[in-house]
Length: 191
Image 1 (cartoon, rainbow, N blue to C red):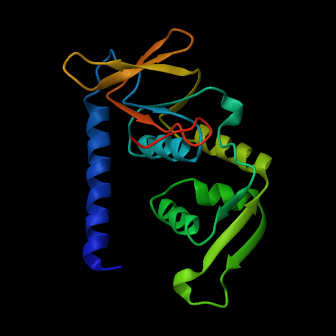
Image 2: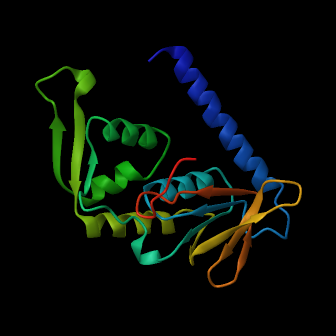
């Protein structure tokens, strides 16, 4: 990877962190949080933890707290493609790599006989241990609150944009930034 690409990525990360910190400092008293993350899967956990690490008060809204960090029927983390992504998340202070290590029952390096570019570390994780470790990691994040409710609707602002979510229980949660991470369990699509 060239130095220019690394520099652009580092610059983008610093810009994102500065934006989240400014959200936190400009938060109005009418807001419930600076950032609301909807969904407690891999992406939602990482997004909520990253926002909280950056100093933003963050709400993670999920239908059931006990399913935060739920893994699919194939409980592996890593491999040739996903392993690269997990290492990048880990390099930025993410949770997935450490949680996977804590829940690991089998480690393997794929494509060991081939060149380094196609080798991929993979962990088979105990699904229950992974879920428990992810929930514990999120509870340790300062500035992050977990909300058990269903996000039913987005709160659209008159001047444009999104200002919060309406939940299944009738609550309105307001924030300056909303991150939707519906994932594959809810048939999420990129639009």
